[in-house]
Image (cartoon, rainbow, N blue to C red; front, side):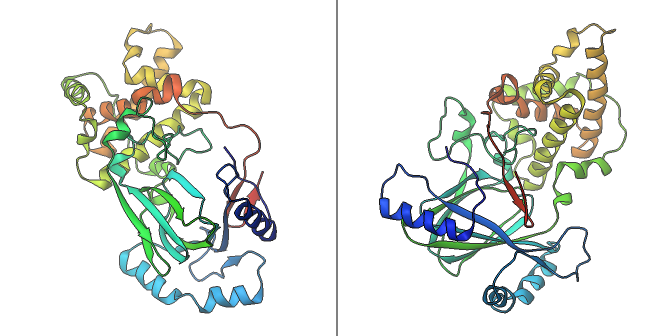
Length: 352
């Protein structure tokens, strides 16, 4: 299975050289990722960039051989927000990034070697079966797109991807919330690229919803709920947001917010089971004087707030809940357990 391990660039280079000498498919593939330059989100736009300890030559290359003025002009023209992180990727032509979405917009620039990028719009978010919010890989798909298991993830067959082959000098824009798989091409060939991440997590992250939701009444079963049932029975759940990627992004954001809320209230062990009960209306049979029933009523008030934010429709929230629990995603659950240390690198901060 492999994993994420902190290592120096020299250790990475030696590991890659050894892997290439072996020339078999049983050894681990190595894929280096590290931020080189970044701005902290709270810093003013004209603040100095933070950087890793790097050589004078690399610093000069980053400052003067990259068209920063062009990039900043493009960000301003497209209303894409500010520059956030410059991330470096390196491999030996065998590694890949599994299917995931980013919180930032990403300009992916290929430097050497080639990459195959498979891209899915936000409309396919629930077909790709995201990990639950509490999982360390919550922005990743639980489906293995290299070896898809349609018995486990049947709606994966309905996803529609776009393919791009990046060659040196190519730049691909990946908007936030768009799913992608990145595969290096050409075994034992140096493969390097840069990601220029921009925008702000607060424009898409689930925590941004707190300031946008207004008080609303509880969601109750009614005529619109029966319309939701008709969508579910015909397998047309995603038709509730049609071809509108903005609406699909709001659905994904809302699902993350609900999972986060349930986790805060009940803990990670019980959150998925509780959402499943609400989605299947099992709470209707709970005694009205029980704590479980009161929790359900409290949760349905939050669903009412979400309905107002999405499109004002009860049907919308009912479909959202069913999308969240589809194929047993939250209960009994499909996510595999991750054991051992977790390593992340964000703006040069490493944590085990």
